Image (tube, rainbow, N blue to C red; front, side, top):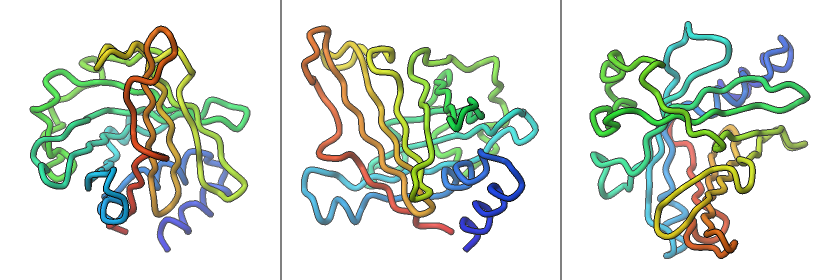
Length: 197
């Protein structure tokens, strides 16, 4: 109910960021998907709002880990959500120095007290641009061919995201210079369902 109420407030009061900002915050799990599809391993995703007075927009800490290895996240990122205009929202992605030092910060926010925006490294070309669907959910991706990677023989990464009040779906596709798919999420990506209000 809180997510629905905040989404309604965002529409009424004119803050286009509010629904998405609320839906990105919380704890999510893909264990139901993993139980139904053996291509997926159960994973957890945690999102927390940080630096609430550092406007414009919203800052988030997102952490992903396998359910079997919660103390060892495989992805930690800082995102800055802003209004790009013309019905488009922008999520700029940043990495942190010594990210492992901040593992579990979703549970222990004090770990992030020493982190400043000046310490972040922007992943140029990996910005996610999102639009709202008629259903009310959001979908987005980064620009094709603009997000570099050097992992497992790939040169460029395309990241897709879908967000609703009760779920976050993430799909990665990594390609080499010839346009051959080198690695990526199985099927239609990992579906994380909200496990906290």
